[in-house]
Image (cartoon, rainbow, N blue to C red):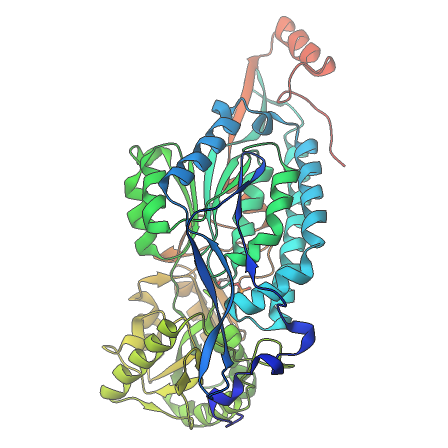
Length: 541
Ligand code: G3H
């Protein structure tokens, strides 16, 4: 790893390459309400970048890249009221629109969104410190996700374009929307993970109140007009207010039908309890995770190290799917650590726009402080940082640290570090590694590295009942997006994927009739004369 002092990795204003500058700060002064961009003249807060700028006196300071509104309960009440009106007990324009027309609106939205790619990508870099390559990937993957969701919706709709006959009854079954969805995404994939719930929610005919994450707010500014222009009034409404102030209140209103949250299980538990009739609230949650890698004695070490580095440190370890604990068989732990240390040392640390950069600044100094706290805790309890300079920090930039041996009782053993710390523990009997997963509060994924089919097979069986994806000789990850993305225990509620998300934001409803001559004629007439938007047999291509 480049051993340049971290402070010097931050550029001065003039050293920021022309192509990646934010020439002007972006002062967002509008929100989307009832199909309009409503101006805001109240309190605002500055948006600080994870990227620090070197000052003439040599000190470094987080760049101020703009500001966003700090709204209150009055505005969030208005946003909710607009979504409730647009839903109108399921009788609103959007929930009753034909699927084809909803798709047209969404396609218009994607067109407008695509036109903002460059600015949104730049804002992802500056606002959350994601590398340029990953920011582009996030944007493009999101557009592909929307397109794939539209294709899946057509299939779903076509599947419902027929009558099912049983026991003398004929029924038409279709998926229908649930109502008002409160949508909140995370800072690490602000665009992708927010849209992974927001888009299917909209396509199914729900109306939405959308609160951007605290870090990763400004990057939605270029998309607000697209939201306002692409959908009927009230279908998408944004709120810019402290979550702790407005979100419990939104739920306490009893008017939110679906909580779509990618965040912490603690927050999710608290919020769900606010709803006066919790059985009416559907929750689609992506929560905490502490995915482990289990490296067996016969693993291909080069491959395991490569996957573990990518799994633990892509985007500085700030992925819910990141490998956050490496469990390595004692017989190979030393060569594994040596190779892992060398691979970590070879990572490029720098600014998001630097070619080939892998380690970039964290969202704020509070995250560096947590890394330091977790590292000290491990060191006090007997672990060591094996790579030179690991854990060194300057404001928001933290050198990745390889920490060994990490044991029960250390923060790093159980807490989700969500940052560039790579804890390793060894085991003698594979049952110890299995017990780590069994006793974990989390249940998202696991990675298994090995080559003996009998041993891998024997581990897969208990592991698939502990987590929702076992990755063989590969890091943990969410994609491909058609695969089900789910979790057990504190890791998730509900399943997301291109097709599952459409199901998550809808419920089957049906029209059924006894198959008498009169009823058959009646249904025929409804279909042939297009009297219903629900009862029809037309096909979407
Ligand atoms: O932060 C959680 C993301 O859903 C992980 O997605 O595995 O594609 O990085 P990923």
